[in-house]
Image (cartoon, rainbow, N blue to C red):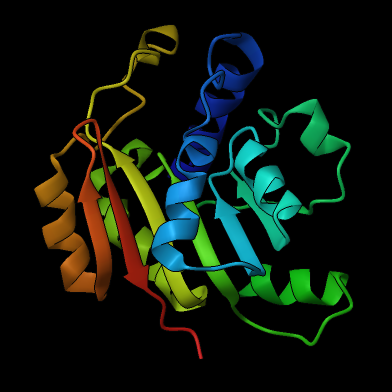
Length: 205
């Protein structure tokens, strides 16, 4: 079983069997901060590692054209399932160009290999450390304007349910900032004590 299949199995177990998991939505909590830092009012958005999908739904209600992506759709809220938001099974370290291309075709739009924005809230700390910067590279490649990330700097409380930590890369704000700076141009970053917030410039043409 490869890493992606292993991780999918873990989160299908979490979303499907632990009722408390997902009650909090970091994406919703930081939605106003994304809008303030990006100064975006519309455009296409890929919410990668979307979890419940609540943040993507809230963004769509503000006028953004949102695509949801995650390892599994088990965690999606019923309100999100009943919406028209497209969902794609993908990991954050996948090549995301095909996701953008197929999504644009499905929306009967001009085919493209990018989104205006990529948001990734409280996902990076879940990745094995060796995959973290690959994931950042993948997101930057398909972001026309930028990638907005919130990254928890604390150990998780739910790993006990699956017998292993869910936060596999627990590092301070500065650790993430230094490594992100080797991959892309950080437009803005903030230390919120329990998490870091980073806006990295996109590189999609």
